[in-house]
Image (cartoon, rainbow, N blue to C red; front, side, top):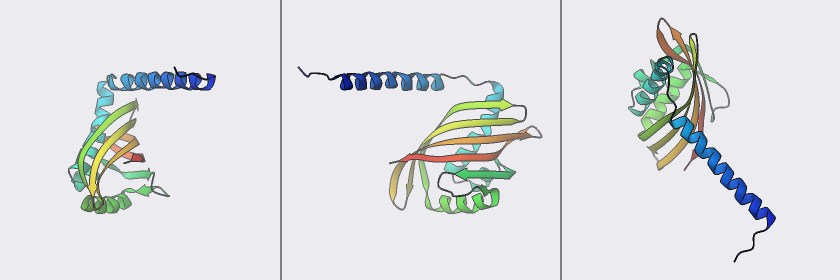
Length: 161
């Protein structure tokens, strides 16, 4: 029989409690029901990510507001819509998305502004081969003339394998 020290007992309790906490959070997120208003805001985000995966640059860019600003984990400074287009042209020419799954975590809608946070799992292939990418994103959406557009986007990869 292995003798447990007080320190290992406490660590086991912590790991068990933390595991239950993560399970509860995941269950709450996956079981969440979105209101029609939240789903409407989420549609523009889904359109943008699908356009990117389908290599449809024009469709991707059509989801962005003219005053768009984005700040991604790998960028030292925020970028505007024109600069984003230049980078996306490059990425779309060198990278292929094999599988992408987005999980909305939070959607807050206040009048004509929506904040959509999601967690993304992606399998991509580039000149270095296939890799998994896990990322988190926050989209700021603005409704103009009855149509949602993405005016801000922040986040990026949190883990690559």
